[in-house]
Image (cartoon, rainbow, N blue to C red):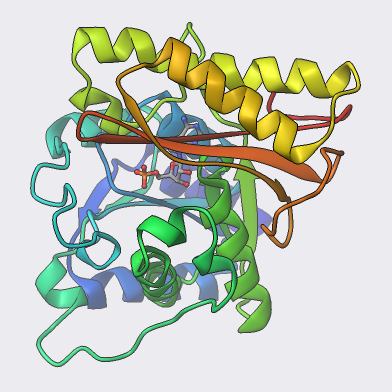
Length: 303
Ligand code: AMP
């Protein structure tokens, strides 16, 4: 790489961002970069960027030679009656944000190319995909692992960057990579939050001003639970019911999907909170489903 350092510098930092939709073209570009010994980082997204997405891109820019950001609202991870059709999209804004971070390639594939007629091959982690969000969204993680596997095959990254906000997704992808010997390092980065603590999410755009105000309590409740744990309260049932009561009082309009204290690796219920557990929640405010989680114990990274 050093031997053609200047060219490399121009390729990685000066060349304008390219928007690629064609699958074969993306694969050719990445294949050539791999042959040139360049480290590719992939940041998979569904677009409508916010600071959470940008934090992943910044990390990738700092740690890789070539950064590919994919923007694809993946139909396979939406269930019937979910928000596939109204999911927020703004490719023009996304591309100017990605360009401002010196991203090399914005990969914007078409659903018809990724899922042509007759498509019939799925990648699925059996156990982890059944817990937490998998209860309410049974086919969701199968859609996620399948698309991420396809994106890996198309972009051949050395590393792929995900957010810990979607902690179950991150665990499932790590498991898929381990189980299938995929040569990709999976990087999980902290949750980026609004000033009042609400985890940034493209879906926050759905919230009415009143719901948006209430939504801040999703994280406030989690932070309260973390304080309780730090002061010695660790029983799962007690903590879950404390949080349930907090939400019923402070987000009265919400329908709680789950509140669960789980083991950070297996996602099974933990009997007590400790360093290897996290509290995960999902709730619906009107038609908007919000998820969040917090690590418990002394050495938390996401507090
Ligand atoms: P999405 O576009 O919602 O599918 O998210 C794309 C990637 O960004 C996933 O790895 C998410 O976990 C990550 N992400 C989403 N929201 C946040 C956030 N608030 N902080 C950090 N990462 C996030």
